[in-house]
Each structure stands twice: as structure tokens, then as C-alpha cells.
Length: 381
Ligand SMILES: CC(C)=CCC/C(C)=C(\C)COP(=O)(O)OP(=O)(O)O
Ligand SMILES: [Mg+2]
Image (cartoon, rainbow, N blue to C red):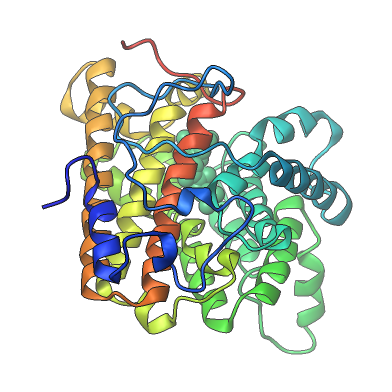
């Protein structure tokens, strides 16, 4: 049984590692931005914010989450400065009139909150470039910035070759290489992947390619359903959203942290379950915080509250509140699975990786809650 006030993950990780303080992260981080790696109990319900440090945005009532310390402002400023320069000067990502939206996305704050153990700004930049590139593909190919389900498969496959290169004959190779400069999503994928490959081991890069193939498969299922106005069953929606999912972000936590979870430990079924549950919880957080934004977008945008309301014949509010419960169950299952794995396999890299994934989950919630430029809550309470 977990100790009172601790989640299963919190109470079993230190015991499994045989440590009672943060030193269980062997060879782990110190210095700037590492405070949230502490194993001090994390309250289930957020503390009211200190008056001198107000946190913007309201958490969803009844949502199970862990508050995080404010991300280090020095790191946030530096990552924000560098990512803008990369976007504008290295990959020509967006036209001038998208600047407000780029700034409002606050990707520097997002990545510093999710990776407090990054040993340097350059490690943080690896995650930040990929996050921007992934959103560019989603926006420009699938959603609000010119995206469409029509022809998406072809576009995604060609963009995927920026991550997983084409190997072909001398005659055709140059045309492929040239294609990687043809649009902003491909320029962003190619450049972000180049930096990632330089920072990672071959097996970490291969892990990432696999997670991105999963993501693209999820985009395709969502697009296919939207082309025929099909509303899936709730479980079918959850299956699609397990692929159209944040998973490629927490699974690079070791590269960003400057260490490697060995491939055979990553491949274990118990680790795969932890990663799927973590990805699913983080992605349903997006469905909940982006609900009003998606209601206001043209056409029907599927998210968990919408699918529950339609498929289970309940009101919008009941659908939303049930989606909160689904999220909470996923979070608790994630924490229980991570605690079980930590107890069964108390290898230092496994423990540090599990902690990194948990911190990413918390940072992701923090970013959604506080991104009032992008998200607002429905009027259900
Ligand atoms: C960063 C990354 C791997 C994103 C992949 C998929 C994605 C864009 C999400 C999981 C976010 O969902 P959504 O497309 O609904 O985003 P917004 O609600 O528009 O913020
Ligand atoms: Mg959304």
C-alpha cells in the first residue's frame, strides 16, 4: 500500500531504489532547474499559489495532477530566444503574421517545465526544436494552418523521410534531398532531427523514429474518420488517440537528460505499458484543455468529451466530466505501472527514466493549465 499522501509511484520508487532521498538518481542532475526531481511527497490537489508567484490559468476542477515548480526563468528566456532564431533563420518556419501565435505557444516554458534535469540549454533545445517541428506538421498538414485530410498520407510519408531517410539510387537521391527543403514542416523535421541524431545514440534515434511513425499512423486514422464524418466508439477513439499522442516527447527524456535508457530495457512490455499510459494521460489532458478551442474550430473536431457525449448519449457537460474521470484513471494506472516496474527492475537508468517521464507528465499539465493564450475552460462548474 502506498504511504498516505503519496502516489504509488512516489512511495515505491525510493524504496525500490533503496534510497530515502533524491540521491537515488545515480549520477543524476544537479544545479539549475532540477528541484522538481525531488522525491518529496507531491500533493494530489494543488496548493493555492503563493501570492508573490501567481500561476496563470485555472486547473480543471476534479482533475488528478501534480503541480510543478515554476520553470527556471533564465532557462525559459534563453530557450525562447534560441528557438525563435532557429525557427526564423535556420528553417524559415513561419510568415511574419504568425509571430504572435508562435510566441503564445510558449514552447520555451513548456520544455523547461518538462525537462528540469537537462544538463544544458543545448539539451533543452533538442526537445524544443522537435516540439516545434511536430506542431508545424500537425498545423500545416493536418489542422488549422492549411491542413486537410485529403492527401495527408502522401504528405506525411514524405515528411517522415526527413526523420527516416530515403536510401535509393544516385539518380533519385538528389530529388528527395531537395524535397526536404520544400516546405516548413519538412525543413523543421529535417533540422530538428539532425540536431537530435547528434545528441542521441543510434538506438535512441530509432526509438524516436518508431514513436513518430506511431504518431503519423494516428494522424491518418483521425483524418480518415473526418473524411467520412465518422464518430468512432469511445474505445476506438482512445485507440486512435494512443497513436495521435504526445508519446514522442516524454520518450526522449533520457536524451534530453544526457543519459541512455538501454534499448532492451525500453523494449520490455512493462516499460511499454508505462509509456503508453503516460502518453495517453498527457494527451487526454490536451483533449480537456483544448475542448473550447476545438468546439470553436470549423467542422466537428473529435476529442474525448465530444465522443463520449455523442456515443454514450449524454450531455456535453456529462461527457466532459466523464472524460476527466477517464484521464484520472489513466494517470493512476500510469503511476501504479511505473511503481511496479521500478520495484521489479530497480536499475538506476530505469528509475531515472521513469522519473523523467513522470516529470514530463506533470510539466505537460502545467503548460496546458497556464497557456491561457491558447486554451480556456468550458463553463461547466
Ligand atoms: C508534440 C506532439 C508529438 C504532438 C503530436 C500530436 C498533438 C499535436 C497533440 C497530442 C496535441 O493535440 P491537438 O492536435 O488536439 O493539439 P491542440 O489541442 O490543438 O493544442
Ligand atoms: Mg486538442
